[in-house]
Image (cartoon, rainbow, N blue to C red):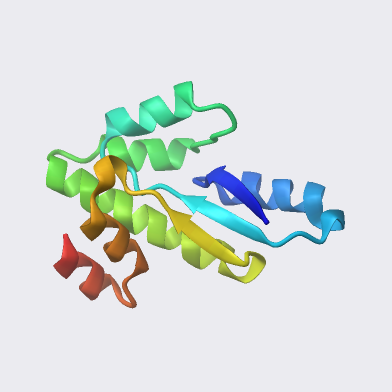
Length: 118
C-alpha cells in the first residue's frame, strides 16, 4: 500500500496518482479534517508535501468560531473523499486532537448525519 500525506487538493492528488500508476500499488489517501484556519496554515507551511489550495484556505479563514471551523473542515474532508473515491483503495482519517466525533463525521453517510455528530 501507499499511504499519502493529507489530501486537500484534487489536482495535486491526481498528478501524484499519475506518477505512481505503474507501481500497481493500492493507495490509501490521508484525510485530515482541518480544525481551524491556523491549523490550515500550519499544514500548508510546516508539513512537507501538503498542498492546500487558496480556495480551501479562504473557506477556513471565513469561519468565525471554533465550531464553524470544525464543521467546515469536516465538509471539506467529505468533499475530498467524494472527489477521489474512485481512484483509491481506502482512506485513513486523522482527526486533529484525536477527536473521534470528527472522524465519524467525515465517514457519515449524509451531511445531516455528519452535522449531528459535531
